[in-house]
Image: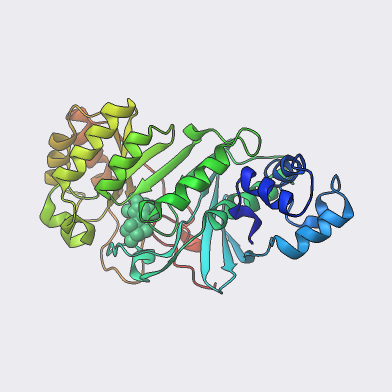
Length: 342
Ligand code: SAH
Ligand code: SF4
């Protein structure tokens, strides 16, 4: 059993079946989530016999870092992990001033097929387990700890659609949040979804402190459908209704993501339509120039067009930031992760 798949009570149960005292569970938990051990031999506070049993029964090796790439400015690192069944996923660390933000994956590939996204272009292979989601963070936590630093933010914006793997994503979120372990504040955790309406509703009802971002990318159904097949299932009206409900139920601001594509969705017309649709909603638009991918012809917006887009939105009362692109030279930008060997 991959050790990161277990919650504290499950570790306790396992120990009891081994005839070990249950207080050892917390020692293991803290070893994993406070000291970031990644082999049984590092648990020096446990008896040797227990460490040997852990080595035999609780695997640490379900997620092997096989390669990493650093961007030319040294601020972004992408790590390729090999899973037990040889599938590959990628996780990105972005350093920005004092921030150390991790962009983590929840699936191998993605079933949602957004045309501009490299993960979508590769199709869906399988869900990650909660442990495989957690292990990405612990890997980087260990790496940063060695530099006297720590993970400050986590965004679920890597490979896959988190709301298509809801239970495992939330289990991972809860494990990060556990106050006896990693104790990572939910407010520093952001989940981005393509817009699976029933899951947004479920998420709203659970009233988590986690931030929510919605990949919108178009302000009318025809355009959105041409970019994102999911719009056939849940159109923009349904999606925005679910978003309004989220804001009402949680009192939290919602973020809309918008990959600016030249002449497609960076036009004044799209900005005006978006402004009208979002007016009065507690929200924020995160616009990012499109990152290039092999399977999509569209081009990135220009600086001037992006600024114009932002101005129109803000005139309509909708706050908008234009994010800088990160890690493009190592294919680590939004939508560029494809779990390929590099
Ligand atoms: N599946 C989730 C999270 C992963 S994608 C989602 O779609 O929201 C993270 C963000 O990157 C999403 O907003 C997605 O639409 C965006 N994205 C995908 N491909 C992109 C590209 N080529 N350039 C810029 N952003 C892209
Ligand atoms: Fe999947 Fe998100 Fe990429 Fe769309 S943008 S294909 S939902 S990972």
